[in-house]
Image (tube, rainbow, N blue to C red):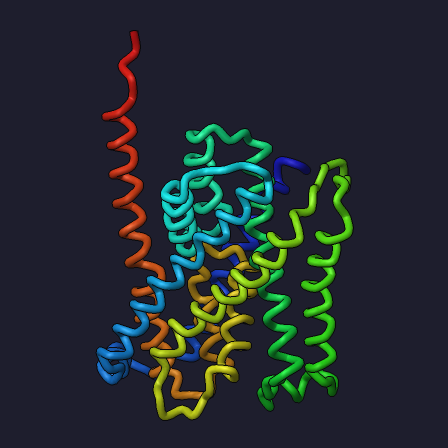
Length: 312
């Protein structure tokens, strides 16, 4: 039985990917390649430039994830090393998934820099905690302050509910984590594993960094959307958050298909125009950073080989 269970994860991921591609095809089958190209041509160069600038800023912010995780496990590295592993790790993770790409890349770098396997596992765990604290906290604030309108086709199949209550619950989870970091200073054993909560200042920084990261990333996508849709950034932000969560939970490499389906479903605009914006977003936010990350990894490996001491 166990030998079959190892295939369950890949099979589920493949099924999710196929379903997302089918749903995306169903939404786009009315548009030709020429229609998509024409829609892309309608996006001004200024908006493309703004997307590239925000992408650059966002990847700088992402360095905070690794920087905080390193300090949470009481280790230290030069900022240049942290920036390198963060950029390469995030670029690979965004395109191939955290498990398939990002963790492998970090394992390669951090082992080379003297981290143990246990320390790397704890570090990767802190990266995930930072992301989810940001998602819950930011969603909670948005739902409490400016709850988005639920689409009519979705609301028809849902019980009547006030999103403010959901916002309170989500924010309580993020606040609860910070509270635990403030008051629980002894190691906690969960399923036979020891977990140590980071210092309160690190926990608060996790919430801030992840929140700014998500807002900036959403901005990269938002500036490419058609300007005449009348969709405000605050209205778009929950849709982007939901898309990101769906990508993380699906484990589909790069979220291909999943991200597009969620955004096109929740963004009230012409599907062809939204898909054109999504294509450019993938190019600027995913593909170009990945190419740069591959070049940086290659140069780093060449540097390591040239500076390695010859064996006696």
